[in-house]
Length: 206
Image 1 (cartoon, rainbow, N blue to C red):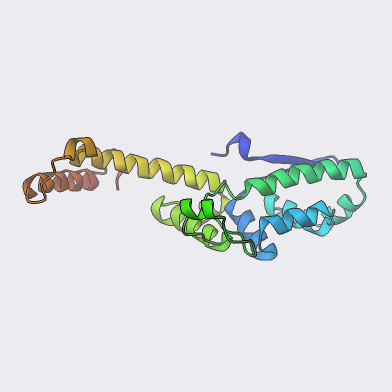
Image 2: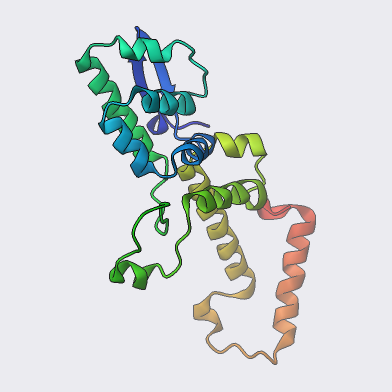
């Protein structure tokens, strides 16, 4: 299901074009430009070719006459389109907390304390694809068509569910303060419960 808040709509020649910050769009643009900063910088200089690349990636449409249409737009209309497209580009990353754009400076000392490991945007997109097709069990097509926010939200929900389920079976940290590793009977009971749930497909585990 697509959320209404993950769409950006622009109008060119009286036609509405919907942009979605999908993983495919993000990966395509980063493979071409290397960073979101480079894309935004190019658009700030009113480079029509970059604007065309972003709109095509976000819409998933070839739009063969787009360059000519944008070139003949009044400046006021073009600036309005640019503003919407810049917002679209900003949304592509899905607010990652530990991404280092290619060519960017090293994180500050404060950032380094919080995020000791940084990854490139290419690595980030690869990881999102792995989460979608692996952990979440989505098809490659659905994963490419999802936004980073879709993938991260679904991943958070699934891991939260599994954590809660395991807490129910084995006990939460508050209930296991006096856990004794020599007490294998309780662990065995928990594992048996988990096997039964997985075997029957109960509680969403398959």
